[in-house]
Image (cartoon, rainbow, N blue to C red):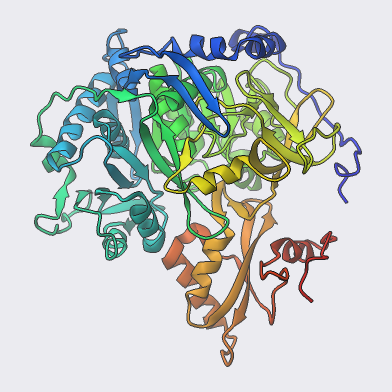
Length: 631
């Protein structure tokens, strides 16, 4: 039993914000702002939404028929009109929208005018390929400006984008292409990583073998000599763009039309296609980028997340562009060519707001303070964290070594399904290392027991969201039952986050980790079922189970327990082959760091693998109730 389960208060450190933090505070007083929201939720969201431009105003702020919600009913809009034209009208035409820094030192700059023109022209190029409103376009690209152009061009013409992280393998890519019924795939010939060219086009070619919905493939060719294209099926990114008309009016979208599908790892096999819609997502992304990340007009803002994840969607692209901010993006990994590269980029580009993951922070901690101390980080104004709980030790290092104790540090909790921030410590509020913070105005959350009843201070429970919010997912693609499973059970009626948490006497919430079968590795959500399916698809494996094992740098690593087919010899080469097989199937992020061969796996009488028993044994703790274990 942990201290929190026993109700014992863990030691808490509180950093009260200096007076200068108050000038950044989004609300004069958090409690008053939160109570004002509770008194008039629709009025709160109406005021936020009114900052943005709508082709037609809504008839009603929301409709809530549990567990289904609609927001800004009958409103018409286009998110790119708010990301682009709105700023051209406000004298930001020549303001830098995007700085991009390639791994080899190549630099690209897009002003808002330049980005607007590129998005319109590529939107027309997609139309010329037969892409229309409601069609799905799969984007499988490295972190380059053209990826941003492709996403915005889809939204411009009313197409639905589904972005796939370029670290995934052919099988995972195929699942997402087939699951979304994608009509066109946009990719690149290769990506750059740690000085090496990583081919992407061959992965796409393999993924398309059983993907009949795909009619065309668009290839961004960066290699020299240019890669060959298959006539009539594959086309060059810039050739089709330059051949297209330059003016592309924004498609008028209903607030509830689909904007994108983003796949997140499932706990029962196939990944889930989370669907976000145009109006509510736009309002949530705008609100939280402005009020949580506190991005100001003169800031240079860097979110280190890959656009293939929800953080990249909301806070590397849509949120800051809705504000008219200057975004910084880079191909560079945090440790190449050395572990000073990110600090060097912060100095070079004068980064003001820096949003990154605990995994990166913990990696930097291993190398001490000398590397960041080589660079001038005085431009930093706000630090923020995302992806998994920010442990107190990482908070202290980030706050003192990088922020010099002068930058507010906001740890953010949210999910692919929520679309935008839900729980954090707003700038200007007291900070508690290890605690994400409180629900932001606009969010109603609590820590509850298995029956949905609030638990006492410092008692472990489940993090639950009890009221709808604009950026919430509308459904799981083609699977209403999966969507309902988030909200409904025999014991409760709330949105179940599947995270364990505690709450202190002041209402600050600490996220303890997942309660379901997802593993968060370096900020990436990996489904145990996906890893197990990949292992079992190898001819030597009869059964497999995967768990997350705590790791000082990555947060967790994947450990696999494998039952081999009878007669198979356990050799070091076999372990290498199994890891390589997972890598080829799912990509490098899902490769088990450890494989243990076993003769049997703990299962319930109904045959479900009890992964928590494996994890408890691995951690040397009591596995809890095992009465359902099949003897």
